[in-house]
Amino acid sequence: MVSEFIIKDEDLARIKDKVVLVTGGSSGIGLATVELLVSLGARVAMGDRNPLPASLDSAGVFYQQLDVTSWESLLSIFKNVHEKWGRVDHVFANAGLSLTSTFFDDEVDSDGNLTPPNFRTVNVNLLGVISTVRLAAHYIKKHGDGGSVVLTASGSSFQEFPVPDYTTAKHGVLGFQRSIIPHLKPFNIRVNSIAPSWTATGLVPEELRVALGDMMQGPEVVARSTANLMADSSRDGQLIYSWQGRHMEIERAEGGLLDHVRKLLGVEIGGTDGEKLEAALKGSIPGVPVAPHARIG
Ligand SMILES: NC(=O)c1ccc[n+]([C@@H]2O[C@H](COP(=O)([O-])OP(=O)(O)OC[C@H]3O[C@@H](n4cnc5c(N)ncnc54)[C@H](O)[C@@H]3O)[C@@H](O)[C@H]2O)c1
Image (cartoon, rainbow, N blue to C red; front, top):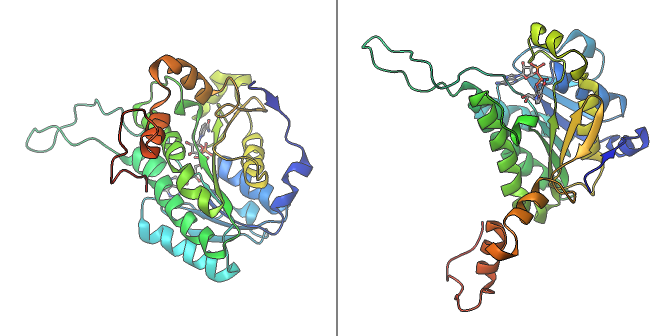
């Protein structure tokens, strides 16, 4: 059953000496994660569009200015980290923005025509994550020891949440994770996500923080779930929801999100669509020949 768990310090010890690259580490959840990883003895690289915060001045962090919407910018930090430490073990694809558009404003251009949708948040929160993970897989594969990527999803990845560009991107992050697991497994690269509930960071305006009061948690709570996903090699395809200082794995656990879907689409319907695809590819659907060119990847 889905149940809460405690992350002990000894659960995080395996992160010592690992090379970890964090995006969006100049504030909030990323910054708290960088601080935790440094305290655990990891070699930490951090990229953000904002400068390295003064609190990290003497922490030995490799910093490079980064815009996750630019392939060249991402490529450059991965290349430099690899050159510096000769490897990349874990990557935290975390940089993110809050709402920049509902998609339903009536803004028009100088000819009076409706302007195209603003994809800024989708570009950072979803496409930036995909680009980061593409590079992460490439560099982790190089040493053959495996590793992991942790994606910053959100409570809005699986709930109704009336913030269109943000919620669309965060659903996309979870969808991305669900689709890439078998593509990274052969290289022993695990993929997991964090789903923080309301967390006191630069992303949440002050008046909202005040209104939410006790429902807010500190970013150091979320940092522990991130480090746990990197350190615990049994975690793959998981999603850790953190709220008010507590943690729960809600994706693969019995009674979790995937379990609910499996029950919803149960035996009468013939299983989930992924299971049907798998059966079709194996030629194990009675009376249905396997499609000659059907394969994944
Ligand atoms: N705070 C919450 O309640 C909450 C809840 C769920 C998920 N999240 C997610 O956590 C992640 C971190 O956000 P946070 O809450 O710590 O907010 P934050 O604003 O404190 O930190 C976000 C960081 O990302 C950086 N960033 C933004 N765009 C960038 C870009 N194009 N390239 C490089 N860096 C960029 C910012 O400069 C900043 O340092 C985000 O993905 C956010 O969606 C936050």
